[in-house]
Length: 508
Image: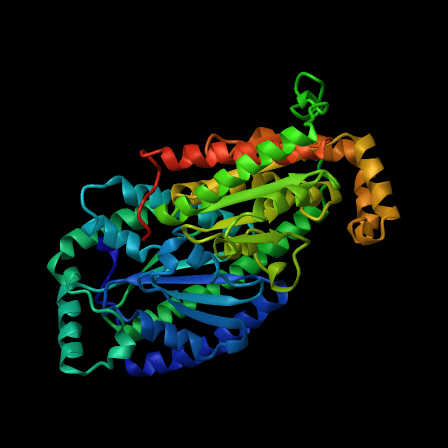
């Protein structure tokens, strides 16, 4: 790919001046169009050191409205960022709908460096590239436009610009980190770049190599490419919308049929219970062990992610309280999840959960979670059929990214029968300090019990994995539910901490 770039491409001053004036007007116009249709745009800038990435970004940013545009310079991760999965720091900087984000260096930069200097672990970039492809596809499926530029210069030009920089002709703050290894290992970097571009240039996130020996040419080429891609994407959106409006409703929203043989929830023994004496003894033992495991996680820098889903009034809050009552509050957070609001609704549905993922050594406990996309959003029509259908794979990839980075992930479904739920609803209405727990929405959801049951079964089947399993907890007897959940959690964390052959890979 790189050998096909014509590095002699140039623009004279007069042509450049004319093209610059036109590009400024068009960039401002397409930004407004993107804002109006809610199109999020990401432009990624990679390439050789001294190839002019920052100067091209400055050229693009100048005519844009800064209220709807951000630039992120992504240099090596901070000590804090290294405690999280690889893609988190990028995900949190993605644009909301209608905004434009320009990345000076991106999720590719350090992966490329690892390919050249990462030692014998040659599989590392391949794993990272696959994770990146999954990330970009998920974002593109959600409606994001991703445009990626590789600014290419030859070795002679890079050497010349680096000498100018060392003489002080370039202000240091405009150049960023200087990596002398690129000149020394130029051929290795070029081969690695070729491999990266070939492996990650896709229909949904294409690479555009740009000849950058002449910066005037590079600026105009990049500006025109962004202008054309935004315009094309807006036209495609309109065409897709028109096609969908002319089609009959999709018939593939049917929930799976179930019987006692295929229903995991129907096989849960809801008669299980504990005496008060056994409950106190087993609960205390599980809590004591949880405290020990929490400090082991801190020492081993292993994050723990725990999700609680289940029927309304099934007792999720009671289990969480018995867990947190003994834990050190410095190392855990509980996140009650409701419908997304404000900037949460303007981003991909996983965006807010990436914000709450714990750093290495800490725990995050979710009362409801990202599974709302395939439960309430599916049943109530808040997500389209394509959105909730692709969410199963997106969730598996999300949880794999967590476990690949060393996190221990476990998911609980607290199960009761309709009669028990009705009894608890009625009790909540009678007791003043519990009345806030019951809402009109709870009663409406109860009317759709069968639909939620079948959606939950579909969810278990598609998202329970060996590294992030679902545990179905009988919860008619609250004492049994609390002890059983804590004991299973203890077992899973113990197993996770004892595994020496983990899937961990370094942060890049």
